[in-house]
Amino acid sequence: MHEGGGLLNWSYGPDDDPSRITGQDIAVVADGKIVALYTYLDPADPTENSAPRADSEDMVRKTVETFFASIAEGDLDRAMSLLTDDVDWLIPGNKSLPWTGPRTRREEIPEVLATIGDLHVPGESETETYQTLVDGPDAVRLGRIAHTVKSTGTRYSMRVAFHLTVAADRITRLHMYEDTFLVSRSVGATD
Image 1 (cartoon, rainbow, N blue to C red):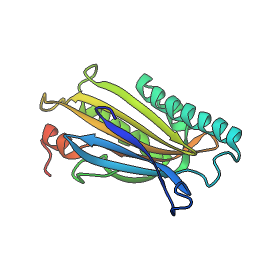
Image 2: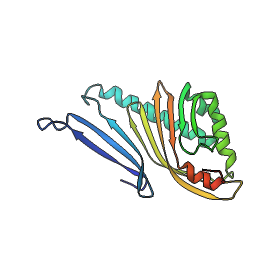
Image 3: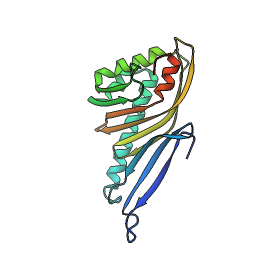
Image 4: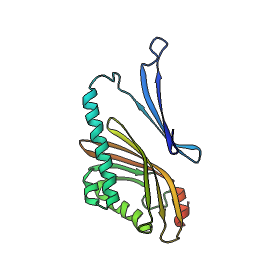
């Protein structure tokens, strides 16, 4: 357990086989409350295909880390090349913010990122990654972001979680969980 959440390994089964099903619960915590919970099941036989799974998970981690590094470096073309044409992109929350809601095509994402970037004072943003957890094709990236809003001068900081799925070195899903109501108050948008 750390400030932004925790990981719990668990097992379940009948008395004669109490570890028949195993997995992990990953909790994202903000203000003392669980704001997101992910449950992952281990394969039925964890010794089966262990080497390909490790290679696959290394590829997933590298793809996710390259995507976020590209965004941080301002290399949008490189970041977009890591998304599939049809991508499951979602930022749930306050619908009055123009970047929330689902997107399904890669060409929609640069506008989302530009909208978020244009909202904040350049050079006054901070990002911190606590952990990137990988399980098969899925990755969860836990972190914190802080920005200063151009229009109001308000500074806000919040924990975030990203759930990504990677196939063939490309991201097929990115769901971002942030406190959009905190952002709404900071930018003066209606809830």
